Length: 137
Image (cartoon, rainbow, N blue to C red):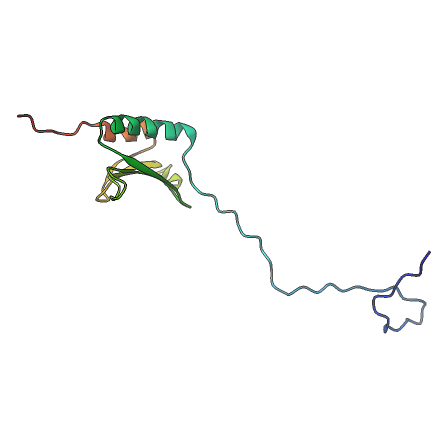
């Protein structure tokens, strides 16, 4: 067998006998923490199905044209547009932190007014189903 190599050849041997090589590990001194996984709030399949059901009827009636889905850190947003270049007519928002209080779902108008808020998405979406008032000649 080969003879072990000393890590520090200048180290003195102790009087009691041959010394074993020692090793010291030095780090940079800063506590390294792994970045926390940021979970985004998103829509599940049932929720998207309910939203797209209403959206499809409004597109067929030529009232709406485009949509956008955003998954943010504290909320999920489904924005509804009349045209792609405009501001959203409505925003359907899901905020889980409000689920025990007013309800996680809300429909917000373009002006920022909350039209409906609640715990059940289907009930909240009914505010979008109301017929537009039209003048009759």
